[in-house]
Length: 316
Image (cartoon, rainbow, N blue to C red):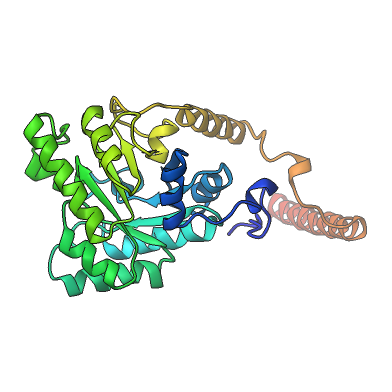
């Protein structure tokens, strides 16, 4: 049980409250104006609130939570219900950024009707404002768009296809593969995708796609020529336990900071340095004196009984 209070109404940055809410059309306008889009993943209320207050434009509840939060080997095991659980938490922490939810593996790979129903849950139950799907699934994007569900596409290295790709490998490394990727990107945009994530492709391919599309591209391991960039929250802060990919820039080593704090706490507990008297609750003065008197009386009774028992024993 916690007595800590988490105020949900106040914001640490009053400047952010005056900025307009980020929407899918707003992202398109940012591309037209040449303003870079800053995107980041988040998986719970605390990380979402920090990310939103830092001015991030797009918050992705990524299926990467399967690995960085739930400890799975890849993204495949995470379920719709688990993704909804985290999407709801993120939604409660965000006021300005656009909230996009990843549709997990298996949630859109059967019928279009099932895919649309699952996507609708992310908007109705999770509070997401768009969903992200992997691969050149133009029919799916068209169906979601027709159902008034904003869509972000995802091409290149698509983690849900890890077994087909034979691992996490850079994609579109030939001219022909880059042409196919550009064609897939055009098709997704024509089907109604509002933005497109490009992952793990050569920067030249990403730049060519970005220049051709009217919708914004958001890169991760796709070079600096995209309309925006996204990283995994835990990668950015050094909270992962595997070697970082080439495209990851660690802006802080929060893992070392947290580990040091936890070790310090453990040492204080072991040496009875925590909690201090100032960190403890106290009875009011009168109640404390009365309780002390009761303790003294109880102690006296116990001592008197012990003396009487000892005397009986020694005289027997």
